[in-house]
Image (cartoon, rainbow, N blue to C red; front, side):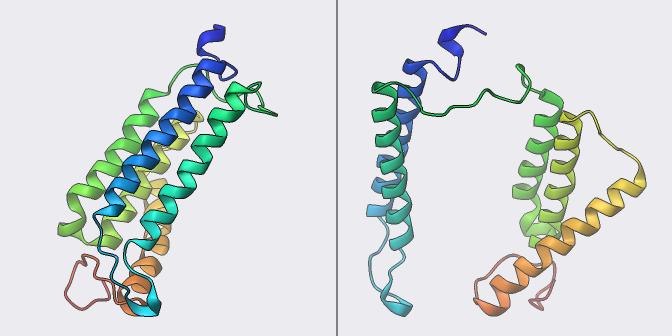
Length: 172
């Protein structure tokens, strides 16, 4: 790996910090278009977008300062492969895209469970442990439902936030 592509490269570190600053400014621009009318508890819907954009701006500025004054401190060597694992990337991307595509058809719980199952395939593939047996698919599907169902119920039943369901009962 050459120095110019290394994570220890000061120009690359500066670019990362500058990218964070640009991202923060874009988020702030978007937050400025959100209504500031106070809602429940006196906090308006633009509060969290502003908090996130300010936090990212601070991180970006600190990254630029660190890059220009000696580089990122205490930077460990990367532990991953030197090359991307494209098969894993495809599994995870398929999970995310199918989730977005099917969430209004299958509902939140099943589409998120599918995303979980495909993402697990991608991460295990990158570790050389891809298991395509039916038993693994069933186990990961059960875990995906066990994770996504309480999230769905918390949002729909406790917080009264509408998420797409499989039925109109509010429970699936």
